[in-house]
Length: 346
Ligand code: R5P
Image (cartoon, rainbow, N blue to C red; front, side, top):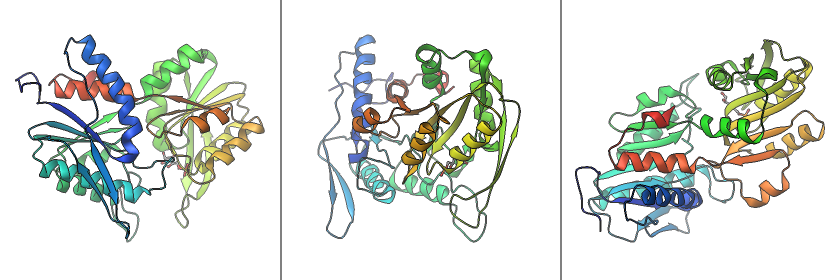
């Protein structure tokens, strides 16, 4: 066992809930590569856990190895398209795993959740909950001291934590690398936009890093129904250009399809999409398939923060997946070694 030294926060222990296992395993590969490169002489593996679902639907996670005094990371992908378990089941599994870590006397507990649940319920519009604040509170109550996530929908959620720290990683570097080295986009012919004003800052970031043009889509929501959109208009020129739409997430796909139609009406030649969290909820994939077949959509680049699985990737010509697992692994390594992570958060 690695002795506890002042240049580390203790033995790095990683456990996964069932839906976080695939992502955690991809992270471990990179973690072992980094450890080897740094000459640590350590092999990292996931510690054994069991996730139990009782006949009435209650859930618990049991940690089957000693973690006393460890620097513990609990990995969970809460919205998992490859599992029958709901978002709420997976959130509960995460909470019980964190609390099991607390009860087992881990020194530090970090939740590694590439998708922060309920992040779109971060402000109140009528007589309703601020559910993202509830999630932050529940994580802290369970014993969580830090949360690592990806492109959180609203940065204001940081302020919902009283004691735990929130590290918000960005998929942009991995996606930009794909656009430049694999897709070889020509920035002089590219306009970056988001599907709504809320994503304008993200679009500006991509356009700056790519050296491309910028346009803004203004989306008005109709709050009388779920995921209903009232109207959309475009500020900027896209005629004869290739367009990259960037968004933190694609859920039902309604926002995206509306933006695609608007951009096509304004003469966009090709449409690429980049998203950190490709949830593709319900019939979203079929909707995007139709747009692809009509020639309205060329490519969607998503990350493995929402792992769609090999079969989906093989049968979906418009989808490419890039991995953010190496980024998470590097951040975990640096936190454990008490090194800076700010360069990795850009
Ligand atoms: C909205 O503010 C978000 O950034 C996404 O554009 C939106 O949540 C995507 O949802 P859907 O795909 O259901 O329209």
